[in-house]
Image (tube, rainbow, N blue to C red):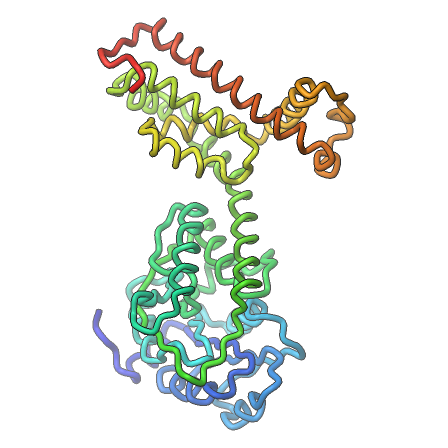
Length: 398
């Protein structure tokens, strides 16, 4: 990628309607240098003072009209600061915004790379990918990024090298800030996932990263990692209960059904028993009470057992939203029957609060129901395949 000079970068950003936004909270030790370096490449810088309690206000005053300052009365969190900065950029008529941290870890010289991406990939949400294997990189950053990348791929089907970097190029005309509920570091993950769901292209470009001695980080590993994990759980639940079933039904055309049957059953080299075993595993995992993780576990087990992953994933959709109440109620009824306990509620008074009081009956019943349905699915699938005349010389398990 051709490297642009600072003047060329400034011209590209001006022509394309791009500004830089910088949330900051108590980074007085690095703030002045970071602002000065950014102004070498961009004339339009929005700084969000997120309730700073150090010398930040005095530093910002030194730059006068060179920067646009938003001030929060309290520390509302990076997510809120970033969202308000993006909204200010939209209000001022910018079409793109580059976000950069104020703690000195990002190099302003990499704005040139974002400017080039702006020319070559307009409308793309670009995330700066750090070299997490570089010397001096905290080990926790590497693990957290791999963890985040895994969940992002699960939630969107898109593979990125770095999903946690705060150095980004946002296409303001394409992203939607309404309805976002997170206010901390997890906001960057939320907006990335929702943008991908909306159809916004996402991509990585390489950026450098350094950790100066006077850098002040406000990332609290336990607290913020827990909040990110909770957000991922919510996003996976949205996928499980809405996006994946909706996608399944959109693709459920007669042509696709015929293609699926032809590719994975009629002309599959697998035996009838292994095809039936794939259906059985999918049904079992689809009913097993591990909501939000059923398809992930089903895929992992299919890989481990060398079963047909496509059939397993399709069969795991047995827990589609219309069937979920019946599966839950059937699990509870079966659990109560096995334990010899009375049912204390019916479909008329079903709620999550009531379900919490009878968790043991539900879990036991769900496991038994999963085993029963999966066994019947194996028998039915195998019988239908044989009855339809599908024979295979490897028609045995193994």
